[in-house]
Image (cartoon, rainbow, N blue to C red; front, top):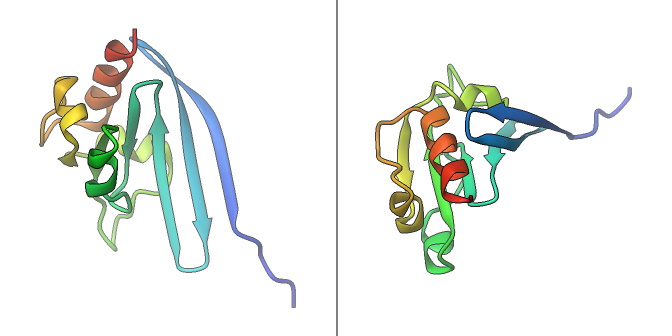
Amino acid sequence: MTEELPRSSTRAMQFTNGTANGFSHRWQGGQYCSIITKYGIVGCGIYDLETPAEFNQAIAIAKGTPECPLVEPEDLLEAKIVGLTPKAAAAGITIGMRGTEAVEKMLAASV
């Protein structure tokens, strides 16, 4: 019997306002994904908002479901933003916008 190791993948993702890094992490019984810009992170619901807000970090999160989890960074693009820190809001990100819109706002804010 071979034990499967947790796995992570990283890739560059091109957007209108620039390039960001997409990440996917999987382990037995779990996963999370994120898109990281110079300004901040658009990620899945695994991210906490209280601590990043305390450190003035820009985080916008989307939430999947057990039936349709967010696994790859591309899954975040059409997902709706359900939470964000004040710094993410300062970049123009709002609850309900699509993940791709949030990434574009962060890329524009990092110029």
